[in-house]
Length: 221
Image 1 (cartoon, rainbow, N blue to C red):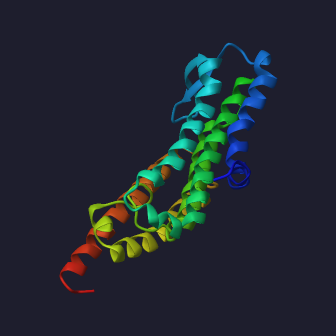
Image 2: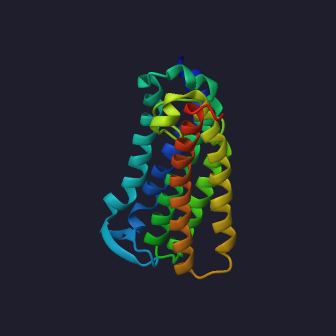
Image 3: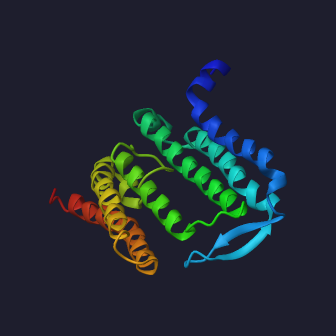
């Protein structure tokens, strides 16, 4: 692929990669030597580190993610499937890298002395990421790296299709319910609902793919 064509296709990702470094250079001298690195479930900072680590770990991870996402289709034995969900794969890459960018700005903002309800923001940020992934999950075709990859979905395209169609609804409905509930419950209850949501969107697709597999092999569908 020619450089001009590559930039045309990847400009939004390149912008996400470059954007943080502009602010790091601009604000470096205004940021204290020690910055927050981790927050507990209550939203209080429970770990600090140098600003080199705090400000560069997020952009650094995004760079690694960018090249990983470019590399995965090249080593996937089912690499041809990616052509069938090229737009959804690009959207998935954007969603994950955008959240990493947002996390960087959270660290940067708090490091500048501005108070944020970090626990609340991070929970909602990831909930909206789940919803976003759910909106494209049904478009993902069988592969070894992206999607609901169980022994049963990987063994049969029909099981893959049915599992992802069901999972797409779960990944939208369950996080959306928690988003709405979050306006009526305290942060502690929201954290519990968030954990339940993660369990639901993780476990239900696995159990569903097994159920469809058993029905398919027994001739019930």
